[in-house]
Image (cartoon, rainbow, N blue to C red; front, top):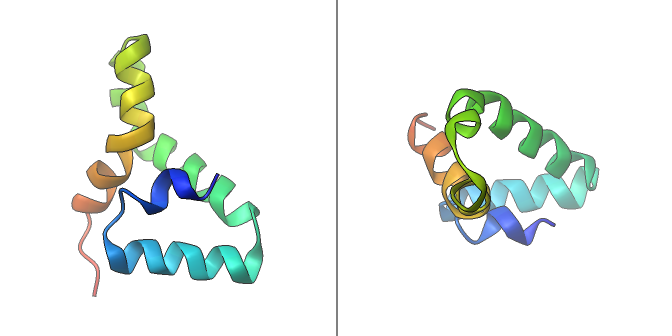
Length: 71
């Protein structure tokens, strides 16, 4: 489950996600996915089946993280 988002995230974000996964377990991934869906809810609701599957698998992580700046 964690590999779904690690491959498409920027390296620093992917590293942090993996660290949190190791420290706190699978709940971190569930919370991450719920947060991503909450942030992109309106876009997700406009997508059709195949577009939705592709978006959730490959594009949501880059969409969300590209809209924020991290220090």
